[in-house]
Length: 113
Length: 123
Image (cartoon, one colour):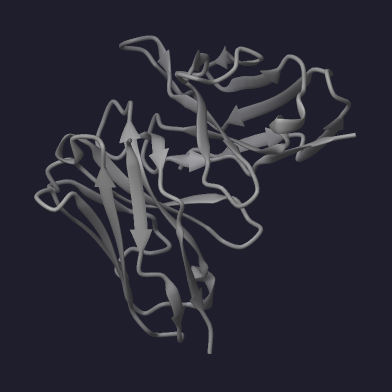
């Protein structure tokens, strides 16, 4: 199974600050046939199901604010919130869908300082 | 509105059984791969099981293989998870999720999630 490791486990930032979450996979999730990275990011607010933010590592889901961006390729990925808002308080998960079983990172909790 | 609604959760004793259901609406259910994903209290997300759009390909996590059975009824737009020989470590919120984007069976991201149904295994 591909192991997904996120860092940090949590971060606390002031409103308007930039948040960066890292995700590392134990093997490449780049599919050579189509040059796509099979990596997605979710946001989960308390008491709610996860919500897809980013797929193919860098494509924003419809309706997701453009302050959220994804980058990276192969085994190293980042989710960036360019200017942290109060409504962004949540746990963020990366997930690979390159191979079965699909696996998730352990989550990164984002809070307001 | 695209929606998934789970039901069937509750309290069950260790060794017992439970059947979860998920009803889909707002999209052509029979065209989509589906999965169950669970989340233990205060923990992260764990994929549990996958079923292809036609129901012919099925996968399970090692932790549930041989105890859980996934199925679907494309006429009734429904997904099911039959859980047997339940253990305390199966206690979790169980989500049904719509699969997208995979390049092979069992490889999906999940773009639509239900609200989840809680299963508590305790004596």
